[in-house]
Image (cartoon, rainbow, N blue to C red):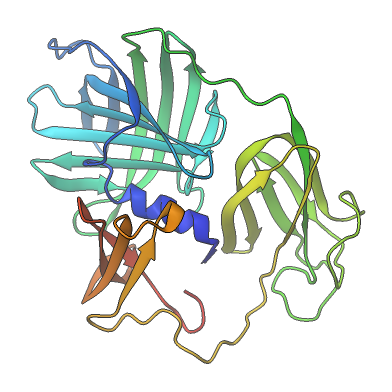
Length: 332
């Protein structure tokens, strides 16, 4: 699976879901009655439930949002986390990699979603306004032994402590066009044997015509063209079991052209070494020397979904979390 760079930022943030601080939040009053379950789900024959503690929203530098829902069990041993990554937070369906589920018991992750398994987990918001939020969730998650489990009958409902309004979507708009030089699988073929399935901001379509160079207009035949309010949107393009994901920023009266390329570049260099002690330092926004992220290869591995992943640590000087990466030939 190929990921555009902004999505890597989201995945790194996801690894610290039980420790990150929110810019602002709307919290519920503490629920002490275990019968008043505000969240619940079932795995196998066991039902889990409890109250929701906090609903919070983070705003990323690209203006996209992370909606976080936190809760605990009646005995205070367990914690649940649900997250949604989007631009305009509103009722709708959100799937991996734009949502996340994790469940912790006594400080150890009991279940967690796999962010590279596209569409394997779904969170549905049925209501979101100034008074509260309700919804449901279901899908595949992995246990401590990396065995996939089915999470079903998931529900959540929270009444906001204060009437904090949901920010309205922009009334300005722009155009987006996704185009490709070749059909599913890349190469030099211009025959749409398997059309590329694409989605921007939840709007679905296909690329059925292939061109050698960027289009001169924003609505050429056979491309995927759409008009959207100004903002940043998640993008998914699928080719069989492979996919490309990322974020697209729509500007007022603009025309954003994005090439979808599933071809294998046959790179000969090692652009992401996983050997022990390999490391990278990243400057955050405004390139502040005291605001950096340090990524370090531990040299250790773990099994997730039957595949081997290399374990990295990420440190920003305040908190520390882990990331999992896998390489297969020239695919990172």
